[in-house]
Length: 210
Image (cartoon, rainbow, N blue to C red):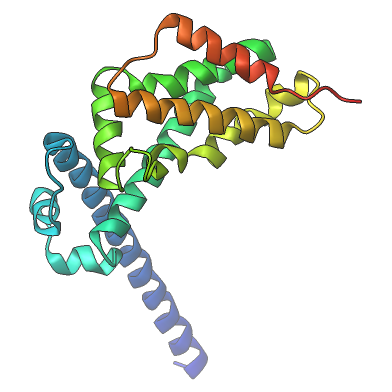
């Protein structure tokens, strides 16, 4: 067997090993994220879990935890990012069912503010509190979703004639997510009138083309 053939075989085996290890590591991260969410939901805003609580719930070791996350804060940040992506995917799917840009914006507002209702509110509040709280000192939990959620408004705002859809979408997202943080912190659910008001505000943020 030539050296080239031996080298190719070694490379293929190494690639298969890395691929398998990558799949195992991805499964570990998913277990840690899911376990952290469960533990955080159970504790609410009464107490923050320790790393040992999370790895125990995940059925993993401290070694596995620190293989992927430098600290518990890093895990909570990843949990926020994961939650934002899930919300973005869900709201985007709901918006795709609507034919008009106005209806798409309405679906967007309803999807965002639904995070302040029922058990979803409890979960969102707990994760955000673990990320630093929802008071005036720090509202980075909900607001960290600003960019990803704003991107969903680019298309409908363009259809509505926005001169700068990205800027207008950022403005609407910042205001709406700020209100979401307020509802969560005050433990108040948005009323239908509130939703109407915020929806109408979002439409008014569209800057007309010259």
